Length: 228
Ligand code: BJW
Image: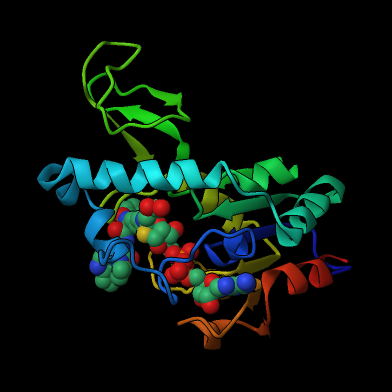
């Protein structure tokens, strides 16, 4: 990586799989027989808020019981020693990159440990349940929801992400199936800018053929190998 100065690293559910968090589209990727596309939408929340809040309460509780793995720790090491620009863009809503020590992380699909009041538009740290529709501590309205980007909503930090991508020398995609846009399109955009692209994944993703290079294997093994 001697000629590489600026890196954008995209991570997906696969990087947290070895910490014990299930991926969305693999085996066991259904929750009570609901596909993620059926519970992670504003329409689902309007139709059946109890179902959606129960889903997120269970996931919020679960991520607080797991630990970062070797792949999160390897990226945190890279983050701390890297002299150029480095940005970890995660689609994940867990906090495992931060708990491993990474500093330069943006959560494009939101965060489990945050709640968003739709009445006063304030976001606040949140570790407990939301199912009882507690009042917003800021404005008192019963309008809190998970601070998660659902299908049809605009992902967070897009300006910062595209600015980093256009200035990058290398784009690395780790543990994502390439099924969900706009993240799935980053490799095409990176290639169009002439940026070197690398995929690290358990199996070939949907856009695998678009990468310059692809290494297959568990993230806990191949990410530390790449970083070292
Ligand atoms: C391992 C491993 C190990 C396993 N080691 N690897 C038609 C065409 C194109 C686009 C659209 C369309 N119709 C609608 C759209 C847009 C839509 C979309 O993409 N839909 C698709 C289903 C087609 N996208 C949106 O609506 C987004 N918003 C948007 O586009 O706004 C417009 C806009 C964009 C930009 C600027 C301005 C406007 C919003 C998407 C929100 C996604 N939200 C979710 C849920 C939140 C989290 C939660 O509830 O917990 O985010 S969906 C879910 O999928 C989650 C994930 O972040 C996301 C991606 O999944 P990921 O991470 O790739 O996981 P998996 O399970 O799919 O894959 C895991 C991978 O890991 C696999 O490859 C395994 O092999 C691998 N793996 N173990 C290494 N040990």
